[in-house]
Image (cartoon, rainbow, N blue to C red; front, top):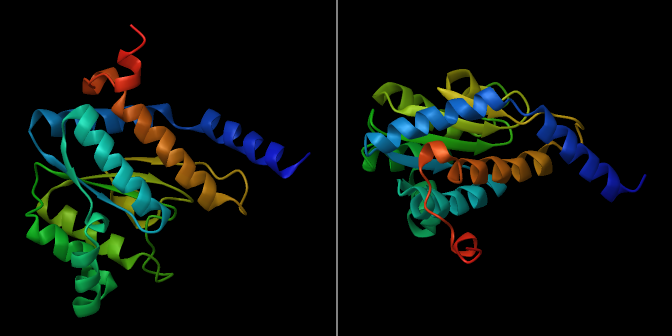
Length: 199
């Protein structure tokens, strides 16, 4: 079997193993945030940061929910990292944004943060701040979901089918799930441009 065949076979296996109830729980949380005119703050690093930027576009345009991600403002992000450190970059940004109990953070991460392994401490600080102010915590996460999954109101763990391809599969499936969310009838999406052309 070629690598391409194997990778695609793994992708199919992962999608078939996704926890549908966990995805529907995210829909329920998002529907409440939308009804309350709350905001969603997407948080991720690396590929997750890119996914967050794309998700902000989709959630704003298709669902009409006010959304932001700190990684879209490189000037502020790097100033915060330079002056206060990477660990505080997200939490201080959330504080200025006045994250509240009406809002949610939505974490896209391969591991969800681990204090023990000293990984993604910025996500851990953000999750802890969200808990403190009563904001909802949502995640699409790989591995065991780490700190984020332990404290999330709703989270999907992307199953591991190959320990050597956890990152590419997790980041790819994050896109599958958020696109499912922004087209879910329970969130009353607007029709996308190309779909409207087929009528």
